[in-house]
Structure formats: C-alpha cells, structure tokens
Amino acid sequence: MTLERKPKVFISYLRSDRSRVRELYSELCTAGFEPWFDEMNVLPGEDWYRVLSRAISESDFVLICLSKESVNAKGFVQRELRFALEIALERPSDIFIIPVKLEECEVPRSLWSYQSVELYEEYGLYRLISSIRAGIDRRASKHLALESRYNISNVRALLEDEISVEALRHLIYNVPKAREFLHDVYVSANKQELIDFVIKGGLQAGMLDGLLDVIRISEPDKYKAHQPYFRYSYEYQERAQDQMPLGNPYVVGNPIQPKNMEVFQGRFDIATSIISEIRRDTQRPSLLLYGRRRMGKTSALLNISNLIKDPTLINVYISGQSVKFHSDVTFCFYLVQAINEKLQEHSIDTSVFLKEGFLTQERYQNNPVLSLSEFFDECEALLEELRLYCLLCVDEYEEIDSHISTDQIHQPAEFVSRDLLLEFRDTLQHKPRITFLFAGTHFLRDLSKVDWSSIFINVKTLHVSFLSREDSILLLTQPVPEMRYEDPQLLDQIIYLTGCQPFLLQAVASELVSVLNLWGARTVNQDALDQAINKVITKHNTYFDFIWDKECSTSRHRQVLKRVMKSPKGVQQKLLGRYEIELRDLVRKEILKVEMGTVRVSMPILKFWLKQNQYILAH
Image (cartoon, rainbow, N blue to C red; front, top):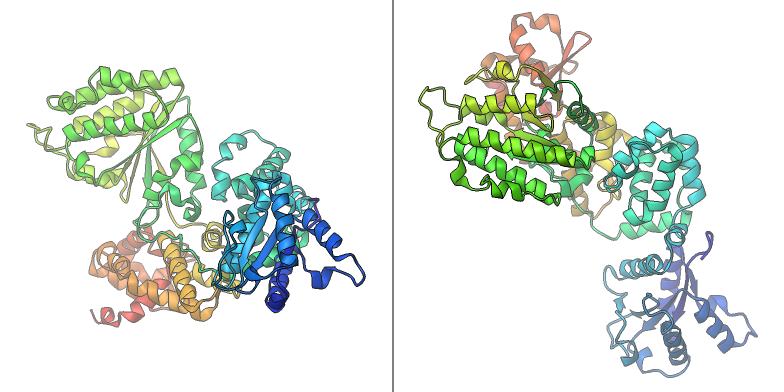
C-alpha cells in the first residue's frame, strides 16, 4: 500500500442479502477503507468472473457475508470463496478471510478455521473494523501501517516548524507510553533525532496518538493547520469509539501505581531536582518531599523511576505507616530486605549480603543499628563497583518520629532510636552512592520527639503542591481522549473549582466518566459537570471533613475559613489582621491563598461543600 491508498476490502455475499450488505459497504467507506461491492464496481458489459477474480486477488481482505440462506446457496458465492481460500494459502500468517455473520447461522465447514464476527451483535461492526486494522498492522511494515492512518509529512512538518525542541521534550514526557522510552533519546538527542524517534517508534510504542492528542489540546491552531491524520481515518476513529463505553482509568484517594502512569501528570520539576541533587559532587543534602495530604506525594515517590528514567538509579520505597518500621530491629531488617529486593529486580547479584548474614532477622536482634551500618558499607561498595545510586524514599516519615524512644534505656525491639537517625546522617555524609528522601506533611522543625533539623542539618525541601494549568488539562483530557468537552470553558470551570488540586481533579474526572457512561454519552456538557461536582462533594465528604476538622485545628481557623468562603470575591487581608496567625497557617496548608492583598479559597469547590452543609455555619 502506498501513502495515499486505502485498504481494499472485497465483499462476497448472496443477492438476497444485498440490502444489509449496502449498509456494511457504507460503514466500510466511512471507516476509510475501499470496499469492493459488485453493485458499485462492476460496469455493464464487463466479464463478471474475470473482474471478480481480479478484485479478490488485489484485495487486502475478503469478507464472506453469511446468512441462513447463503450458507446453503450455490453459485458465485462458492466460487468466490474457493478462490479466496487459494489466495489465503499464500498468506498463512495474515488476517485475510473474515466470515461475517449477518444473522445467527451456521458457518460452512470450509471456514471453520477462521474466527467469524457477528455483525448483528452490539459491537459487531467495531470488532470487524478492529480486525481489519489489526490485519493491516500485522502484515505491513511499520511505515506502511503508519501511512494507512497518519499523514506523516504533515506530522513531521508540525513537529519541525511549530514545536520547539524544549516543548517537544516536554510533550514526549507527558505521553506515558513515550515516557517509557524517554531515556533512550532524552538526554542528548537534538530536535531532528527526537522527531525521528517519535515517528519511527510511534506505532510500535503506541505513542503517536498520545503525542498528537497533547498537541491538539495545547496547540489547537497549529494542530488544525497541519492535519496530522488522514481525514477518513480520524473521522472513523471518532465514530468507532462512540460505540464503546468509556474506560475509567482515574485513581481517586489511593496512590497512583506505576501501572497507572496515564493518570500521573506533572512533577517533572521534582524529578529533575532529585536527580541533580543525587549527582552533586559536593556534599549532598537530605531531601524532604513536603506537601499537604492528597497532593500526590506518595504517587510521586512510587513513580520516581518513571519520572527520572535513569538506569543507574535504584529507587527503594518504604512507608513509615507500616509496623515494620516502628522499631530498630524490624526497621533495619526490612529496610535491608527492601534494598536487596530492588537490586535483584535490576538483575544485580546480591549474594554477598546473604554470605554476610544481612538477610536473616537474627542478625539484627542485639545491635540492629550497627548491623545496618555494616550493611551500608557493603551496599556502598557494591553500588560503587556497578556505578549505581540508591535513593531511599521514606514516606510518612512523621510516623517514625512518633515511635522514637527518648529513654536512656532503649528497647530496640519496641521503639526507634535516635541512633538510627544518626546512622542515616552518617551514611548520607560518607556514602555518596546512597541518598535519603523523606516525605510527609510536616517540616523537620515541626517534629517533637527529636530534633530532626539538627540531625539532618543540610535539608533541601521539594514542595509538592497543586498541578499547573497545563498539566491539569492533560490530566482531564489525555487519559480518556474519547471524552470530549462541549465547551473549553468547562475545563476552565473544573480548574477553577479544584484549584488544580490533584485529588480533586482525579475525583471530578472519574465522576464525569461515570456520568457519561450512565447517559450513554461522550461529550461533557454543563449538566454532566454539575452532576459530577455534586457526586464528588457527596462521595468524598471525608476529604472536606478532614480540611474542616483537622487542618482547621481551632475555632479561630474555622472562623477565618467561613468568612472567606462566604465572600464571593474574597476578603481584604487587612480586614483579617486579628487572625494573622491563623491566616498564615491556612495559607501554609494551602487552603487559602493571598493574591494582590485579597484572601481567597484555594479550592472554591469548598464553597459548594459548605452550601450543602449549612449546619456548619451555625457553629
């Protein structure tokens, strides 16, 4: 097939089924194929059998339309079938013959080896078109498959003329499937190499659609001017998708696992900051990933490897909430286990740890911190030999602080000691291949059991906050590209109401998918958005309760918040002078924000929640 030629599809049928075949012919045309239908393709006076034989031999696919009457009929249908079966012998690995059942009927014995499709079923047409497209992909080269769908010259022109190299790198980063291959080209590739990477690897990696969708959203005028898809291919893609329910990939309330990277957006600045600190030649600081609850800290930790895409980095994640890390004995043992497992995942020989007894719990019963220190010596030597780095991510580190014992007579099997933290500091200072990253909702200076700030003197804080507007739009549109918005202002409404808070964005998007599937629709309108907002407020009431009861820790905090939420345009900061401490606290917790001397709610959806809970105003 050349760049401009459409896949040819021969339709074999019995004349009594002609009316139903006409509908199929129309759908195949709409899908961007070139169907051969005798009513349309045979001219008066032509040699019927010769034309028919040539059409079958030149076709890319042959559809054998079956009905109760046709399976028992004799004549040209049987001749066509025999000729098609002969050609199929030359294409043993291709999808070529497709039995198409127009109604419930038996499949002839000669076609038993071919999977049939029930056109009369709900998704029958969709399965047929998908099968044809799969056949194209299987038999054609990568370029041939691309040519059947994308206007490659237009795609290249769009990337070369309209997108800067920096923007192109960022676009690739924002496409999860492209991000998997990013480390191969990202660091040193020039613009032309990046473009070749995108086009040549686009089909195999499934990244080209995602990249073009990002451009469609972020640069609509440039996208429209270059028309990267052949029109027939793009139009059918939309029609076929309309027949299927929307998938719902959004993750609400739980950390986003690496397998769900399509709904993980942003945090690129955090990734680049982490890698730059790890590679510093001078003394490296302790790293603190700070952010309020439901901002995506744990998701960032779990996906650091996918964010950084550095094959020399071993990322180890542990949660301070786990009982495994609430005493010196278990902490040291399970930390060693976690490091060992991660190294083995990277096919690294860790037999030296087994040989030295570091993988047995008995090793840590008497003096666990000393054993951990000796393990770090061996681990540093192994990492140095292999030129690797190990990033130890300690999530919810405040929980560790709550289990620290300050008694002089310390029970290592029951509590965590200050000595363990001192060992961490010593490792950080003298073992350049090992770095610690703590994550939590408090700064080191806020903790009470021990003075973390004096132990980890040099601390670099990485702030996990709201997403950018650009990343928020990607999160609302890219994971479910079939979900369309009737008006771009609806996206603006979501961004305004959520303030780009990651949890709320995921929640609204998830509810939108549910509402549209309930309606059997694809397009978000104002009614759908209103329903989704109401569902978020109702289903996730605990999140709003947490803000009201926990983040607003005193009645004075709540007085400030009520006053600001009740004001449509916000409150002048000078009018809240007597609440200076509470205002500063709520701004630090990112519940309120101050802009040009005016105090406003960071997430205006809180106002809707307050409206539904009017009883709060009476207290």
